[in-house]
Structure formats: structure tokens, C-alpha cells
Length: 107
Image (tube, rainbow, N blue to C red; front, side, top):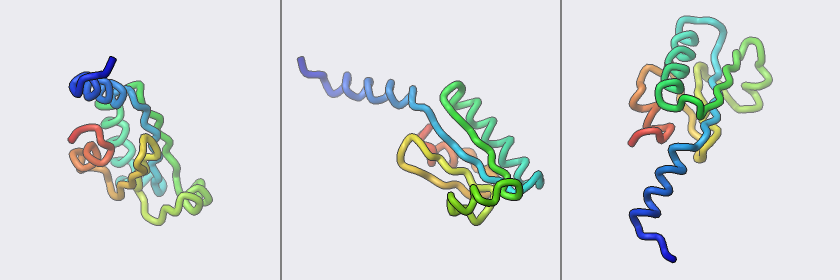
């Protein structure tokens, strides 16, 4: 039995709402800018992705090799590793609308 277009769309939306997000936030020490970025991303994740995300915070001062491997040269930088496509956000993470659109949480 073939699915209708509506059924197909609803199935895709349901699957999308269950996707697990893997995020990595690169910061440079406990500067005010880094602290703000951590707070903002955690708040966004809890509000929109509660129970569906994994957030790793990497301090470039403590783990410089991680930044080199990920080719991160500016901090703070948020990397959305999954779901695809991979996205990078640079800055203090105060533009919530831009982050939500980039993470494809809202359109």
C-alpha cells in the first residue's frame, strides 16, 4: 500500500523531531565571551533539544590538539556534527534565531 504525500511528510517530521544532535563547543578559557557562549548553547539545547543532544565543551587552552584536529582557529565556535550537514557557528552565540536556523531546529 502506497503512502500518501501527507503521511510521508508526517513520518519525516516525526523522524526529524527524534534526531539526536551531536554538538561540540570550542572555547578559550573562562573568558566572559566563552562563559556566555556555554550558557547560551546549553539554554538553547535544553529548551529545544531536551533529551536529544550531546554537547561537548572543549577548552582550547587545555586541549589545543583537539582544536588543531578539528581545524578550529577562532573561539568560541560551535560545531554541529550530526545530524548532517555539518555546520559551524562562530561568536558568542547570542543570535538565537541564527543558531536555531543553522541547527535546522526551526525554519
